[in-house]
Image (cartoon, rainbow, N blue to C red; front, top):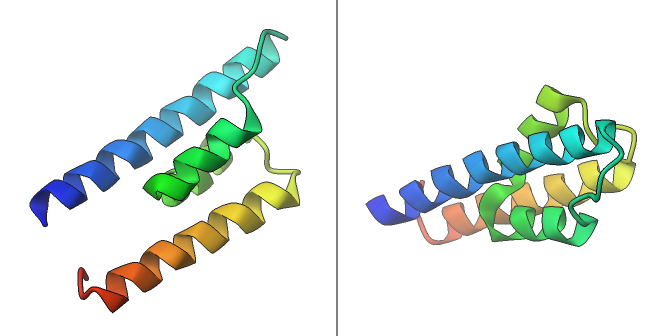
Length: 87
């Protein structure tokens, strides 16, 4: 159980960092991180980090698709926590 929480902390911190890097790349008009990569990070447990990164860096905030997908993945993860009595 402890390792699972360490994993979630890691993947959420990584997701926040990746959103920050993508915002920096966008400002410099450089090659960007794909949306599929950002969605994959949310899918594997980084949805809370994605929502935090979106607000922290003001990145992808005008794209409703990002809010919806990240919120859906967050609720799926919360449901899984509840179902398997992790929280």
